[in-house]
Image 1 (cartoon, rainbow, N blue to C red):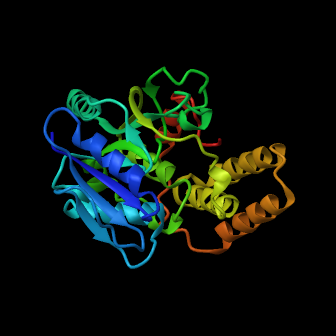
Image 2 (image 1 turned 120 degrees about the horizontal axis):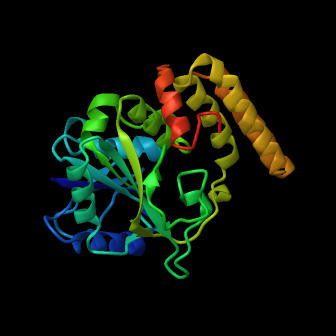
Length: 290
């Protein structure tokens, strides 16, 4: 099984990027071909053999990753699967690529593998980095309904069948959009605790656009993917959860601004999932209302 890797960067973490590339180069088995996408920057000083794509502007996380996918041919089909890795992450083990190959080879229905993210100093995995509701034990691998954007592997046949990441999202929820489309097409998603990306513990709210993007894209996610009956239920639950978390005044203002934007701006093509997919998500422990 041929593996590639896509890494997007804004050029502000050269030392971390070099360490990540070294960890990819140390992987057991056949070499993993790497493409680094510069988001509005020219990427230089990388090891020999690492390809680069320099974009004139920052296309956002899904847009940049889509460019990386196409660098491996239409829909990434020059390889069998692609790893997506944050540029400040580090593959802890040298057998991660081989574990990916083995997982995809043993289960033809497996479309996406979500890695475990752990802090390099403490080894702790944040609850939000376990892509399921029952997240108290991050060491338990399981079937899941979404995945972690900067620490995963995707079989390229998934992109061929359901398309790439939603570039218009720019940041937030693009993984769930792809996951729902993949699940609706019959693919499976696994969370693997033994595939680890070391990554410093951070808060998602560190991004200035976090509250607005999270709210806007949550509405877009529902409008694009959910049966009409579930759209108000899903968004009502998330509004209640947001209010219960008692965000600051400016954060709440940004959230409601994004929520309004999600209803008043184009969200891309609408392809509501089948009701059997709704039931499948429910059986996996995360009905698409939360």
